[in-house]
Length: 145
Image 1 (cartoon, rainbow, N blue to C red):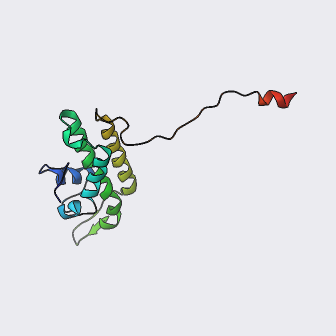
Image 2 (image 1 turned 180 degrees about the horizontal axis):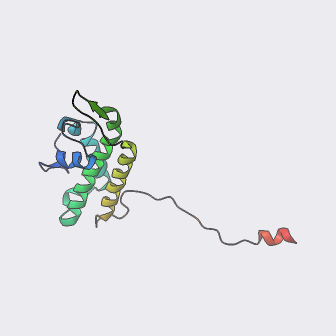
C-alpha cells in the first residue's frame, strides 16, 4: 500500500528524530508496518478529507501532522523495546528515562494542533463537548425566608 501523505524520502529519519531514536532502535520496517503508518495516515485522511488538494503551508502542516501521528503511535511501544543501560568491560552507560506514553500523547496533541492550522479545516475533526452555563437563581432567597 503506497503512502498517501508521507511521500518524501526522509520521513523515516524525521519520525526517528521526533522520537530521539536511531535506525537500529526503530528500523524502517517498523515505521512502515501495516499497523502503524497506514493507520496514522488513514486517521489523518478521515480528519482532512481534502488532503490531496492542499497546497503551500496547509500541505506542510499536514505533513508535519503525519510525522507526529506516526511517532505518537510508535512511542508507547518503545519502553519495552529500548535498552536503558549497557555495560561492557571498558564502559557502561545509562540512557535518560523517557515517559514514552506521555511523549506519545504530546506528539498526538502536536499533530492535532497542526491539523487545526490547516485553513480548510473547520473543526479539525474534533468535537468539543457542549457546555451550558446557568445564571444566578433565586432558590437561595426562597430558603432564607
